[in-house]
Length: 124
Image (tube, rainbow, N blue to C red; front, side, top):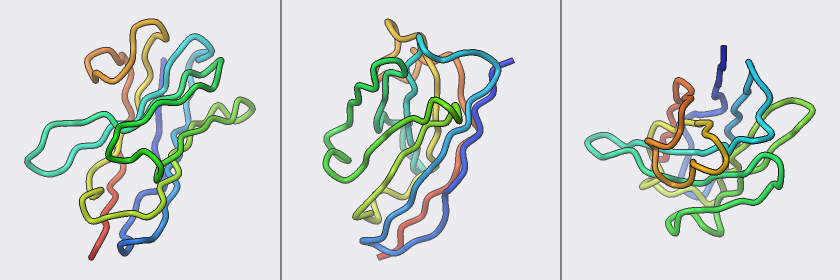
């Protein structure tokens, strides 16, 4: 059974940094894309970043490009989202997700597995 468990959220001030972790278990993910999405109150869930597990290639939304970095640790089966220069508009519940590599890109419906989410709140 696939499990994705996020951690690392919290309350920070604008300009601060946070690192989210997503511990993956239940299968091998070397043919998967690991995505990060977020959902703010009253808004639709939006794509943030993704990493192709075997190649390490990364992609970002325009709103976080240059500030956020996603990476993976093969030995720990864990994906990370390093968030720097946080802004109040980054406030949301952040989710990690796993989808088959040749299907999953920036659309949430392409991802088969989801974590429970972790809250990130950025105060001004």
